[in-house]
Length: 125
Image (cartoon, rainbow, N blue to C red):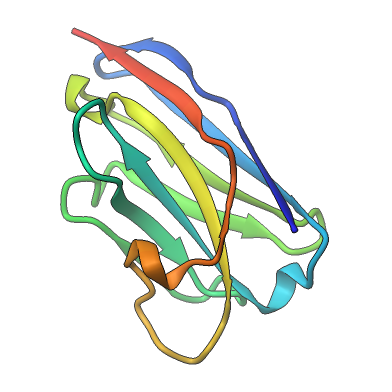
């Protein structure tokens, strides 16, 4: 199983970025996808998750209304569209996957067994 996150960068406050997560090596369609982030000195925290059908989304309160998670089961990819970025969104962002076990929402770090390597997002004020 491989997850490859990309799309991070440096952006000014109020700007946008779109993160991508490319998946391979497993049945992407039967897996919940999630995005997490970790700022320096802080624990990894949940950002957003999406069911394997794409029909259900769940967001952390801190990003609700600004971030949008989506997936393309043909391309084996998941995305995180981040708008109205704030300096406090600065972190390394990770994509994660876990087989859909019928529980929802899937938001804990320990809920996910597969992780990508992370991509840095820096929002300047």
